[in-house]
Length: 442
Image 1 (cartoon, helix red, strand yellow):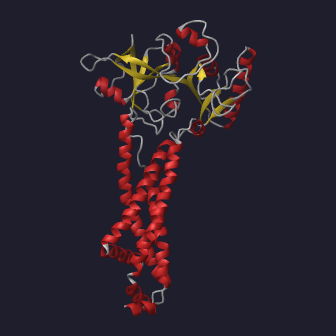
Image 2 (cartoon, rainbow, N blue to C red):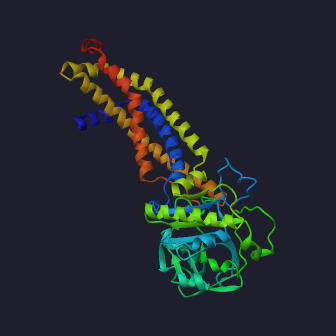
Image 3 (tube, rainbow, N blue to C red):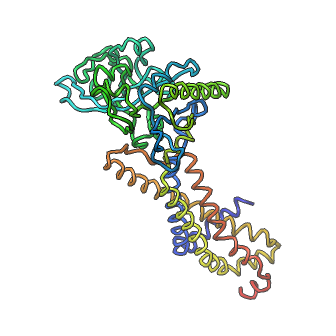
């Protein structure tokens, strides 16, 4: 019976092509806008690492000025990063199965003159645990180990893109990479790795791609590296200039991550953070009320407002636009259905029930919604591509916005819902007329 109704619906669309086109266009425009803004919001909001978001925690401490809270939404606002001395103190804990302090910097790369001229490149400074914590996949080689962290070995991990640029895409493990005035040995080449947002560093540009070069944290001091991202600080000027003063200052510039496998480990680490803060208070620091935070990725994304308010607002507006389109199509569908009164009258006279007539017309409405929805999805792909062009022009990764399976599924559901909303009353109205009226018209 469904196949029969579907065949009748298709013939009805072809019979009045002009009117059908107008109805399909209304559905398509509504779906295009709602899908585009739903996908844009989803690109920011989706879990960037679902395999490990349950066990990863971001650490923040209130080491700020006791006289003034950190600028923000309230008295409990925390600095978004930690100081170097606090990172060192936290790294002493044995509770996490993995942990890393990390920050972004920049260095000049000196490739083979036959390959390219020297250029400046952003570099991620981190510990060996960074790669297994964040599931960074390797194409060649592997990450350095803890011994390389301790001994400050001149080793580096590079991305697939950097490997293609410097070494033609071949296995470059063991080859030399000159950064600044130092030679580093490539120990690993990452495979394609592009989280939905750069969750491991939300302090600057969550839509940016990961850095192309990674080196051990211990090299920040010999190379005199400072963050190429955001930093905040308070208190008197450092006692020593440059990096030496930074080591003991209240400047916050390091992102601190830990991996805690279960609730017991989370509770133990919270206790460790409180004990650490109280010990620092005895030394004259952390004079504000105890306020440590161990955030999940979802909590962190909410605190850092990764999802722009504008994205949510535009999504709501686009859904309202789709609803208005659906309501405005009621009149067109009502006229289209009532024009077929003789056909409906004959079917009723031959024994078709009101429910059968209603279902037939609803199937037609849903077919209209589905075809219009598919056209809307196609338009949405183009609109998202245009947004990516804008992102690329601003120096941000050019593939941030896109449609995945959940968004395509949502679009189809919205299209079917729009078809039902637009056609429910016309279908009901059509099946309510007595068969005699239809036959008289015929």
